[in-house]
Image (tube, rainbow, N blue to C red; front, side):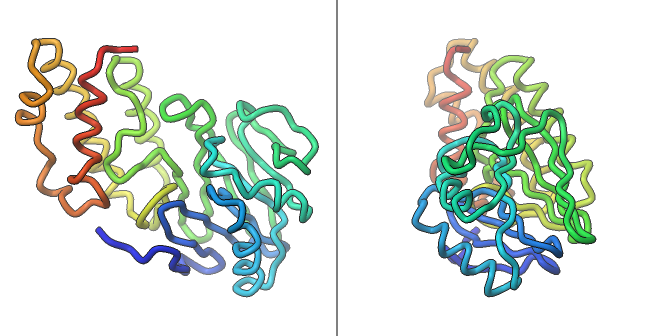
Length: 256
């Protein structure tokens, strides 16, 4: 599955995406724009601001960080210096001076960012990839941003214990409950809920099979031969060439 690096996509009315290895989404809430995640390169922040203003006519009033990995927050200081309010889960740290890009507004379970006739609904679904992971739903557009809770087949979550696997099941099930026609992940192509559903089934197969084979004393090569990449996922972005192999290697390791 290919895509054009850096392409600007119109996903729905008032919703656009800079589609790349690191994705940045913005939405026009009527009285300002919200940016979801600010990328790995801080030098891109002024360019994102320019795109937002040229396309929507709005200023960036808010930034939502889906979690606190460095490749999602590097542009925070720039947007904070321009007066934007930074919003993130409370595990990202207490509200501090916005000039350093830390959150101004934190939340626990959920938060609704109210615009002028439009809103962005944020829900915490942490406990698999990072403690902070949150999804952002734009109800008028039926667009859902799931960040790194979906990685085009890359198991961003550990599933080598029943508790870890169960939490992933819970999180992905909650994602599937959203009425979303378009789903955006943190990295790579745009997807649909059908991709999330297929990944959930793959993850269940991965976590049921690989640790069991490892416990039986199979070598990594034997495990890889017994659990090849599914044919119907062969066109997933970067899946066959390294993601599936990495998943098997990681799930075959001792629990730690």
